[in-house]
View 1: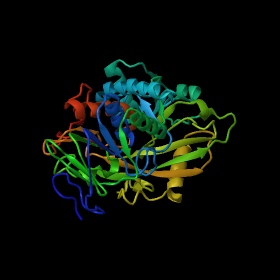
View 2: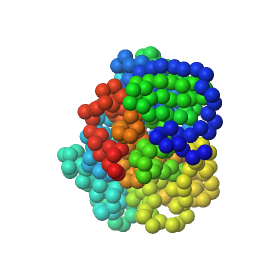
View 3: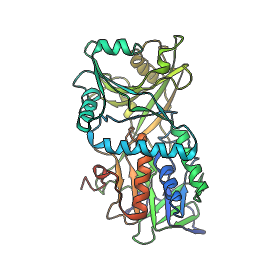
View 4: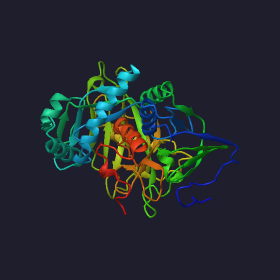
Length: 406
């Protein structure tokens, strides 16, 4: 059945409602953003219910893979920098509250030709906000970071204020803290309908209807299904497949064990990776974006995905494509020892969607994090809690207004 109008989702698998619940705020989806929002609300004493289709920290959506890059000199645009600075503070808050290390500081290296987005975008953001950074020649990159094999025209940008966030651990920590602060958490519970209303919006999950003052929808790749008008009645979100691979190191001690996180211009794509997070045994890399017009092997990584079915499993072609990229790093096996597929949820301009839509009263929306959103999850959680509680936030989310396509 096609999605119904007015953000009501669809009735596939929905049962007759036999139970009713009441709360101040419902959070739909406890992945990267929803877990943080639920914790912030509960910490403030707000009566809140979080609903999760699977279990916190699962691998069925877009918040798995053991590590996510956090960087401050933001190549996607200088407008992101104040928001990522707020995220650093919020991550520290979560680490202190949970007593768990969730961010590993490594520094970050952006590598590519001087006019590539990885290099030029990072420099532009750093200069605009006065961020400490170093521009390195190809020879300086090769000397300082010998694990990288730069191309003849490559240069580098290095910043200290970067590292890796541990996604599954962060989600579980936030949900655990939310429960400890009084939030109710419903796991293994599929939401089939979200109904906007200015006074009492509601959520239908199985045979239960939850009425609330506000509903925060952070359903990830299921956002287009539950709220098809999230980005406007004529603007759709798309869900795409991506593949990550872990390569065994072949040198001991491995130079990858202590290197920075990185993003590199690969000619036909932008790819990224991490220092070893398992004591020097493997290094993880992935492709973030295909270059415009790329039709070579591996371009299918942007193929559409039905989130209910999940992304197609990685295959030998995926392994070969990742292997060609990994050849730009020294001391790695030629093919990955394991791979996973995940989902990107993309807005038309590939920037985030955070806020309200006038024709969807009672709902607070967050989505379209496009594969570069996890680092912001801690600050997004604060913003969503502000919007649900007060209708506004002081955090710099104006660039992510859901009405910007109107």
